Image (cartoon, rainbow, N blue to C red; front, side):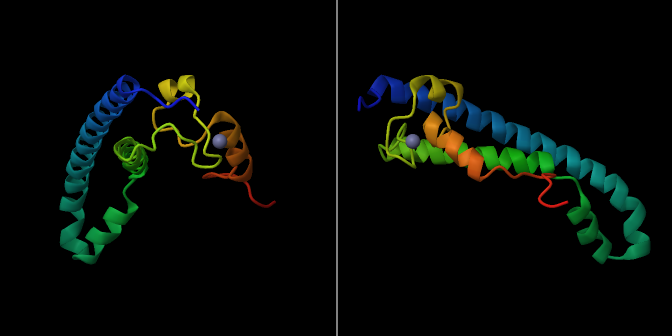
Amino acid sequence: MAPLSEADLARYREKLEARRRELLEEIRTELHRTEEESYVELAGRVHDEGEEAVADLLADMNLDFVARQIEELREVEDALGRIERGEYGVCVDCGGEIERERLDAQPTALRCIDCQAAWERTHATGPGHPTSL
Ligand SMILES: [Zn+2]
C-alpha cells in the first residue's frame, strides 16, 4: 500500500480546514437567522403562554439544516483527527487504501469505494424511507 505523502496530507488538511471554516460560518449564520425569527415569534407568544412555550417553540423550530451542517463538521473534524494520528486515507472497514480520486472528491471519506458500496447496501435507510407498508 502506498501511503499518502506529506504533501498529499498537507493538501487534504488544507481542504478540510477550509471546509471547517465554511461550515462554522454557515452554522453561525443560520443560528443567528433562526434566532431572529424565533424572537419575533416569541415576542407574540411568551406573554400568553409563559416560559414553557419557549422550550416548545425551540423544539419545534426547524433545525434540520444546522443538524446536517453539524454532522458534516463532525466528519471534517474526525478526518482532521485521522490526519493527526496518521490514519488518514485508510479504509475503516478493510484497512485498505482509499482511492485518491475518492479523497479528492470527498476528503472526509471513511471507506474505499467497495466498502462504501457494501455499507450503503446494509444501511440503506434514511428519513422518509418506507420501512413497512
Ligand atoms: Zn475498504
